[in-house]
Length: 184
Image (cartoon, rainbow, N blue to C red; front, side, top):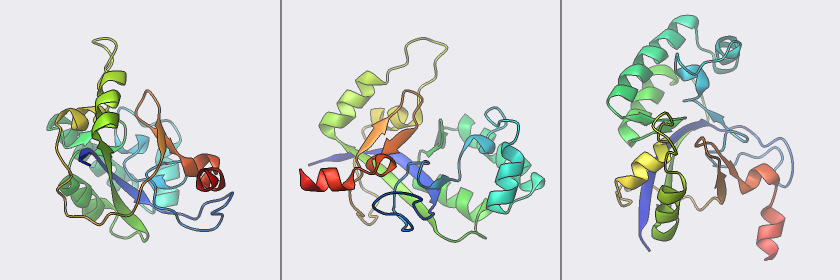
């Protein structure tokens, strides 16, 4: 079966706070479970009021680093190296961002998301922007390129996700469905 590249996430893993995997780290790109290092604090046009202080306190960065991150993300948005809301369009941009701004953190993972043909085609159709004012989410942008999995990364497994209209998604871990899925 062919798998198509949807993009990459730079995640700081943290122990799950509930359910079957409580106190264990799981490798998922869902920001309900892990911390996305390319998040609303990363872009000057998406940052909310208290997110600067929250990022400084939780990620060990400074106001100056956040300003540098904003400059970097503006440049990368212009050349389509990152996608909305928190996606890296290529592994090199994820590595550069990690090395430039977050090399001081532990438990950092670059995780790729790939979809099989049927899901790719359904996704592209379902998430088509509904107006000129509505931007295209990064996952759809990447899937439309129809790039096959060729990164030579390590296959870690599969994650069942539900994607929201804005591009964020939830993993089966968010709803602690492991036991239900395992029994079926």
